[in-house]
Length: 511
Ligand SMILES: *[C@@H]1O[C@H](CO)[C@@H](O)[C@H](O)[C@H]1NC(C)=O
Ligand SMILES: *[C@@H]1O[C@H](CO)[C@@H](O)[C@H](O)[C@H]1NC(C)=O
Ligand SMILES: *[C@@H]1O[C@H](CO)[C@@H](O)[C@H](O)[C@H]1NC(C)=O
Ligand SMILES: *[C@@H]1O[C@H](CO)[C@@H](O)[C@H](O)[C@H]1NC(C)=O
Image 1 (cartoon, protein in one colour):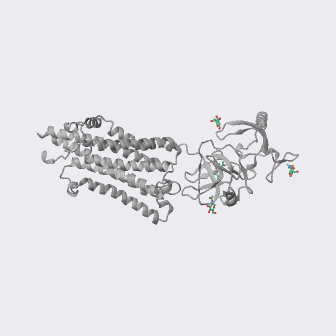
Image 2 (image 1 turned 30 degrees about the vertical axis):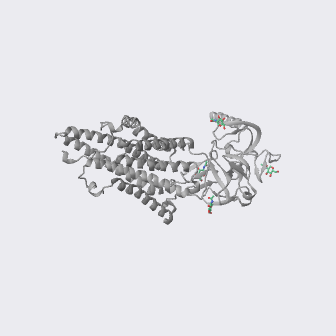
Image 3 (image 1 turned 90 degrees about the horizontal axis):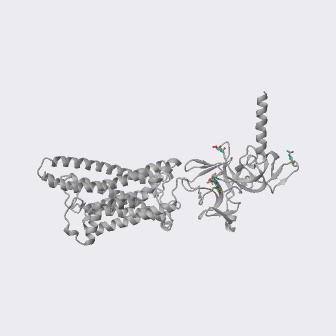
């Protein structure tokens, strides 16, 4: 008994020591500055028509910052008001506006006249009630803002942007079903374009979100590298064979895709948002179809003239490939466009250009149908083609050993094999990065995974740079480029380094 007595006295003493500075059992973020409220002789305060008993008040000489550290401020009285009545955590004083995530000035007359003072509050029992933010709730507006240079907000009328505000002050973000506490979010009235002025939650970007600057740097560098690569391929005649031309088309589509991505990032395309969204979609899809053309032509190269494909392909192959790649991309774009008009179910719609996002909507699984799904099919197709080509190469090599033409065949084969490895690298880079992109999309709501996959995003945006390094900054291409600059490219024959494919048909009859 005695030990327990001693212990409880010790605990009591500890609690009392704390209560000098803080209200026991009350989170700082549940308190409000009540020093301007009326104080009765018995210690009770009257704040906003609410009686606050003395034990729920205390003098504070600090304020707790959102990141957990405290800051010294002038001594003032705070009351644990949120335990008595639901609070609403404002970013700034009511009727003020936010600009660039900072509190700034009052609402305009129009905004004051049209603002919606009601919020949907979810009670403990799960029922949803409408509450006037100032008459029914306690406004907390002196708490520290979540510490980030730029806050995001939710417009609940946009798909996936819903939220639930609980009586205890927690906010449920529907997008990733993450519950934010009052340190992590705040609400403020916001004027939505062409709509009402209403209360919208604000919060910091996910820590897994890339910074706009670095994303821009990566993409712009990619764009420059793509232009350089195309220039070299157009300049050096030897590179302008069938594969090379397909490669140029692929790069051109990729260029357009990245261009619309970066325009969207900086909101330059908001004037023609839906068009930009579809153009971006078309370009990325075209890039994928060109990649499949490249894998098909490679396979065809090693399959010999007897392959079924050759029988079907008309004389002008390049024209056929163009019709196929651009046509298929156009077809998918048309399907997506029609689906956007026809489909009633919000979740199954592509929602291109919804909100301020001039791109296909990537917030939920709908994007799998229109964007990542077709992409995945092409990646699978390419994988199959590359494996088949590899098997074919091994076979041809084995057969060649038994014949006298061995030498020439091997030489030709070597040159083709170099092309194969070159494009295999491209395929791995492109296939892998986009496969990972899809996985990263599927895991986007898990903050830890999303952070890890940020590397993949950067890799994806740097694809143009990677291609430049792989295709231009290699000894073979540099040599061709040097020769071309010296203007004697015609003198050089097909060396092993030469990746030209002018004589690449491996005719089975030579065996
Ligand atoms: C303190 O005084 C106020 C006003 O006289 C009264 O309404 C309140 O009930 C009192 N509280 C206590 C705990 O006595
Ligand atoms: C919290 O933020 C303040 C500035 O807002 C800064 O001075 C302080 O160092 C930060 N504390 C921690 C632990 O990050
Ligand atoms: C509040 O609930 C109503 C339905 O009762 C709904 O129409 C409205 O969009 C909701 N507002 C917010 C901000 O969630
Ligand atoms: C607030 O209430 C919601 C729903 O009742 C609950 O899920 C959540 O854990 C509560 N948060 C806190 C901090 O008590």
